[in-house]
Length: 113
Ligand SMILES: [Zn+2]
Image 1 (cartoon, rainbow, N blue to C red):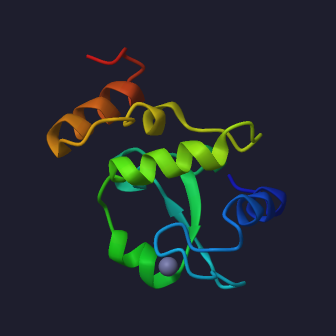
Image 2 (cartoon, rainbow, N blue to C red):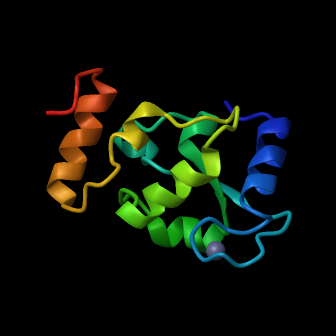
């Protein structure tokens, strides 16, 4: 669950901008799940960013790119919002198939293979 305080802190960490396109997000920003909920992503601050509705829809059910993972980890460094471990497990993985396996293993609580 994401509280109003969480959302406000997220907005500060993102500099008021959409996580995906970097343009000002405004009050209509939506919660985007970094690891999609369809694939077991949790609805917690450590797996959520603020994004325009359109950017959220465009991202759809894909996993974040390595660049997005890096940006997310950098934004969350030292923040109480934290990073959900399966997102951190994607660090440095460019191959899509490997990324899915890494996420699935992390969600299952297994060490990186
Ligand atoms: Zn956007």
